[in-house]
Amino acid sequence: MSSPISNKTLLSKRITQMSASATIAMSQLARDLSAKGHDVISLSLGEPDFDTPVHIKEAAKKALDEGQTKYTPVPGREELRAAIKTKFKRDNNIDCEINQIVVSNGAKQSIANLSLTMLDEGDEVIIFSPYWVSYYEIVKLGLGTPVILNAGIESDFKVTAEQLNNAITNRTKFILFSSPCNPTGSVYEEQELRAIADVVAKHDDVYIVADEIYEYINFTGKHASIGSFANVKDRTITVNGFSKGFAMTGWRLGYMCAPKAIAAACSKMQGQFTSGATAFGQLAGAHALLSDMTPTNEMRKAYRARRDMMMEKLKEIPGFKVNQPEGAFYIFPDISALFGKKHGDTVINNSVDLCNYLLQNVHVALVPGSAFGNDNCLRISYAASDEQLKEAVRRIKKGVEQLV
Image 1 (cartoon, one colour):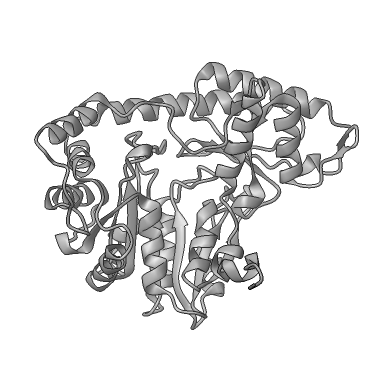
Image 2: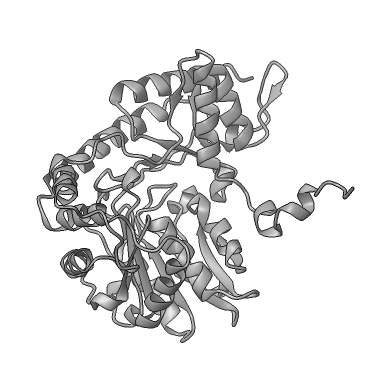
């Protein structure tokens, strides 16, 4: 009789060496605690608390009623790709052709497609830190080597062109960052992006992957796209989607604009995995981009008001150091002043300890900054009601004040 297959031989190194998503893990811990009867406030997921605007849902219903339920072209329906082309020119000053656009099942898949099609073992990807939790693992999945450039709260968590210039090597394949940024809410201004573009322009084989999923949740009054700059426009891949600005997380709809060869490769890769996104969802997405933006603008105003309220209240918590985020719906306070403090037998040595302590003792779920490349911080999502946010901050303050 043969011996049982061990876990070591059953599962690939690829999966055993991959870290689970910390945001999803913390959300599950919060649900588990809620299932035991506790009143948990979860500020861990990056999900709008608003419903998808009615006119977008109506467009999907219309598409369903018209029988739009069949397979779609792998890179996306012509109607949606045409709408995205219009949007890129209108909002981002990016000129692109239809065959440069690939629609995917979420912006996350767009980034995964890029990693799997552009990277070979030994290729380096420069990731601006703090970074979205999945960037690191997606690059590893593509056999690339993540190279992390760190920026702290003193610089509004923004990496400089000088840092980038010093980090590029002959192995660098692309740089990867988001603006507005998850987890910090930081927004790279036009002059900052131009300085970064000028560095990349000196290296013919280095590309830029700009994640702009939070584009419409920007409080600066102007969104700048690095893909619009002439000296790097042919080497920039702009990634975006519908989840945040249109409150369409469950629709799983993202897209990219890339050089033709890269777009074709991503379509080829996607064709062997998921093929095209849902037919009726794509038609609703096209309607979202080309119709009334009032609901999106109203959501942005609500997020800004919440940010202002949260900033005022978080500053009252001992040991919390906060800067003002200019986009997205996150605050990323530096909580390193609390390291070494205790509550009973619990010692706070890092961001994971603090998040676990707050979840277990005051029932507020946050995400440790270590998941985003900065263990001195934690991420607070303010995509929740005013009442929940006020109560969450009250609980956090109570928990922190109990530390000695």
